[in-house]
Structure formats: C-alpha cells, structure tokens
Length: 164
Image 1 (spheres, rainbow, N blue to C red):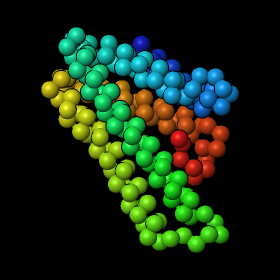
Image 2 (cartoon, one colour; image 1 turned 60 degrees about the vertical axis):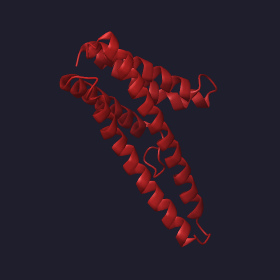
Image 3 (cartoon, rainbow, N blue to C red; image 1 turned 90 degrees about the horizontal axis):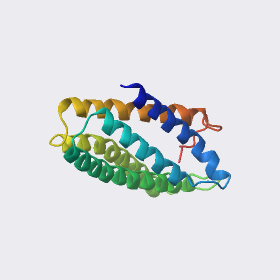
C-alpha cells in the first residue's frame, strides 16, 4: 500500500471517529462526512490499483451499487435491533414468537451482509485483474478495521449497544 493510500485511510478513519460528534453539535450531517470518506477512499484506491478509464467507470458503478445494498441491509439491521430491544424491555413480558422472528431475521440479515462482499468480489472479476481485486480487498479490509478500532474508542463503546 502506498503512503498516499495509507494517509487516505487514516484520514477516512479519523473523519468517521468525529462524525458522530459533529452530527451532535449541529455541524455537517454524519451522512455527508461518510459520503466524503467514500469518495476519498474510492479516489485513492482507484489510483492505487492503476485502473484504466473503462475500469474506473465500471468499478465505481459496481462498488456504489453494492454499497447501497449494504446500506439498506445496515438500516434493516438497526430496525430489527430496535424492535428486538423493544420486545425485551425490562419488566415487560416478551412475546416469544416476536423475539424468535426478530432473532432469525437479524441472523439472516447478517449473513446477507457478509455474503454481499463475496458477491461483490465475484462481480468485480471481469472488471479487475486478480491483483487489483486483491489490492481492493486489502485496502477495504484495512479501512473497515480502522473504522472498528475508532468506534471502540468512542465513549460508550464498552456497552452492549451496537454503533449506528
């Protein structure tokens, strides 16, 4: 990984760490910061992989499509977690059928989310060379790990609450 890509990943991770804070203070919305991070990451990784003009267009379109699908899955997971938490309120009898439905749906959703990365890579096969696919996999894994690391450093990260 080049120094420029490493710097881009660190910057992206730093922005994600401050995004919740900024959103709470009424400045730029978190979604705008995440969008900026996505753009910076895609620009860096596109340069790092030395994509041709045709590859850039096809690659960015496909990755964007899968990112939208994962965003939908993430929103559904948040909805399911909230519904499960509501069902499991202390002092209120939970409906076993509802709890079972929410737990099964959460697990199915998580499997779909994980499979989305495999399916995305499969669809990238005709667009990227094996080396480029590997570079993209490594760069994205590092970015995702950096995001997880920063999320764990946030106040309240030790609680059972999942990050939004």
